Length: 53
Image (cartoon, rainbow, N blue to C red; front, side):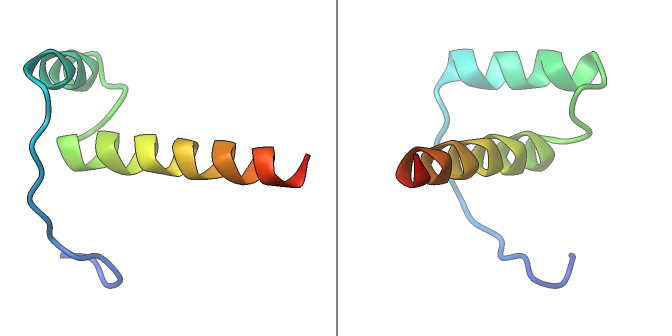
């Protein structure tokens, strides 16, 4: 496990999980963790950008 990361458990809608797995097959993400981290990163930055505008 990487330093600075914490394991969590989360429930994900089936349709989203299917989409994530398709993206992994297409090599967009390497793992489900990678997809979740990317999504949260994008959301965080989008919300922060809205606060500074």
